[in-house]
Image 1: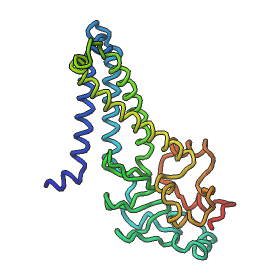
Image 2 (image 1 turned 45 degrees about the vertical axis):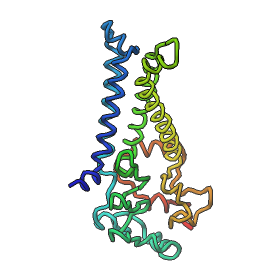
Image 3 (image 1 turned 90 degrees about the vertical axis):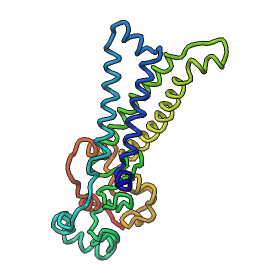
Image 4 (image 1 turned 180 degrees about the horizontal axis):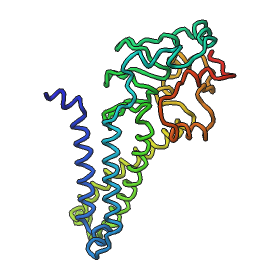
Amino acid sequence: MFKNVFGSGFLVRTAHVILTWVVTLILFLHDTDLRRQEETGELAQPVLFVLLVLLSVLLYFAVSLMDPGFVLSDDDNDVKFALGVSEEHQDMMAQSCKPLRHRRCDHCLLQQPMRAKHCQTCQHCIRRYDHHCPWIENCVGERNHRWFILYLCVQLLASIWGLYMAWSGFSSAPTWELWLRGNGLLLAAATLVGVVTVVVLLLLGSHLYLVSHNITTWEFMSRPRISYLKHCGADENPFDRGALQNLWGFFCVWGTVVWEQVYFREGNNPV
């Protein structure tokens, strides 16, 4: 029973939600701009702040609980028919990149579409695998990657706003001891929010950079060991279609992408 609770990420998600609302409560209990506006009947900013925090929590649960792109069977992964790779490219794959033709997972024994990877934690192969995130206790892959970035944007906005509100609540005191007594709890909340802000900012920046180049975290970190990339030059990315088109395809095009077709598009050399 306890193993299932830990495996489901229940404790991680519960801790995230509790900390989020505890920090929010601290910002309202101390003499911050949120509390002052609430007391004077100016409810616009307090309500918007609570709604933003609520949205960040809802997005957190959506990203952590949704299917990141599990490969469940071989039926959707037939290289020749379901993926639409031409006979000419089948021959190219057989001659130069044979592992790409029937790349079968050593763990779940399913055929992996290009850019998929088996996650040891989730015990599934994930389409367009990016990374396994312990923060959400789920993989980030084809189906939830854009939602993960949207969550990071909302979380960053809420964190920066929370930092500003915490700063507005610090009061002066004649000695450090008295100052810590009056502001210690608010200081702890502000420190936690500050750490989260830095981490989220770094995560968001790195993910937007990788998305603009159409490469995943796993591909970026493990390029020499990936069969379909190790033959490419150091600066060559067979999936890169330019920053604008990469961003448009990532955020605006829904559905499963046939990466074999992108990889073997006209003029691309797979070796």
